[in-house]
Image (cartoon, rainbow, N blue to C red; front, side):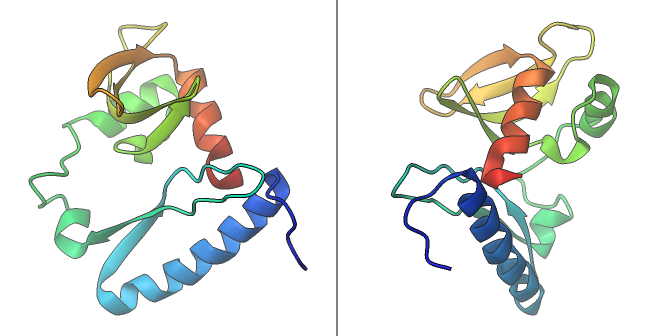
Length: 137
């Protein structure tokens, strides 16, 4: 199969294949890996993954700590519990998921806009849509 342009189906196929190869190789180096957003245009596809050492995966890395209770709060609002730290694209801007505030029913997700490091509130629907479309998932 020869890819002439990157459409959603070719990106999804290629991302799945690449991720499975990276996922198979990571344990040989004592790493875990997670798939990040994979933006694409008609002619360019950026495949992105995040590698973590065993200590970072266990929560020992001081620069990469999930806030206490995040998984419980995420589950309360219908957000995947592994969403913390993921990058999502909403209305053309990239955000990193930082926290969840279930009492704010309309905009419970707290995220940092990567372009200027400002914190924003957003609805779960925007985040779920972005997570589903990342890498063609």
